[in-house]
Amino acid sequence: MGETVAEVGEFGLIDRIRERLSGSPGVSVGVGDDAAVLAMPGETVLCTDALVEGKHFKLDWCSAADVGHRSAAASMSDIAAMGARPRALVVSLCLPADASVDWVMELVDGMSDEAAETGASLVGGDLARCDTVVVSVAAVGGVAPGRAVTRSGARPGDVVAIAGRQGWAAAGLTVLSRGFRSPRALVQAYQRPNPPYSSGPGAMEAGATSMIDVSDGLLADLRHIAVESKVLVDLESGLIPLADQLSETSSAFNVDPLTWVLGGGDDHSLVATFPSGARLPEMFTQIGRVVDLAGGPAGVSVDGRLWSGQGGGYDHFR
Image (tube, rainbow, N blue to C red; front, side, top):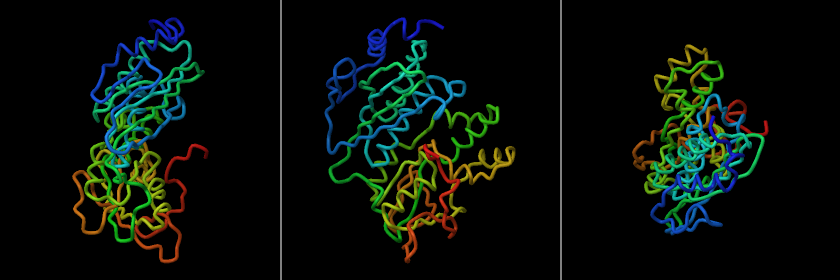
């Protein structure tokens, strides 16, 4: 198993992590000080996400590198959903004393490699002892002043469009939950998301009126846009991309593939609204429209039928 965290100690582990990470442009002070120092253009965008062992991942389903990629992706996709570009990550890592140092180094490599996909860097964090693994990643990004895309700008007539894979991670979770490891593509989609990071700034440049990262489910997250914008979002099921892998696997597991697509999270696709007639940026596909409330409640409908809020996403406290 090699050395444990208890054997090398907190500060010894910090030294190992510091040696693992190299400096990056725009980072004046990185790992090893009280705080990192960044040179940030424009407005600063901040977010944080926590992944808890047994709740967000299982160690027998995900390698340390997988957990690293997943934790970094969860935060950086939120930055992209604001139309911003991720610049840096800091991580609070809680570990059992008998955790393997090699496992921690692999985790750090996973986070660092995922950050590098966007040009961001892992620049610091904190360590604490805990009975289970908790990885909490805070991300910082930059966006031009006044250009951040929020959830509250959707207007009747706007086109609803999605970028990235949707439903793949949920399908992979179903596969793993039933004791299988294939189709491998779906299992890997659960283990390591592939967020369309560049599509966030691309949507902002194309005039997106609202945008959100799909982490808890397409219906659940679109409802956030609907409520904040005081509109009704109507999806057309026939327009929603349905990969062959999902259709084939759904038959084998006797599952409606739309259950994965509409209710599944963890792919970290981006869904945005654009003015009617606007040219959709690369990677975005229209899946619906924004319509006026007409006296009804804000929410999401599928093929004209209002979604009740049941079975359409993840809620930590239900």
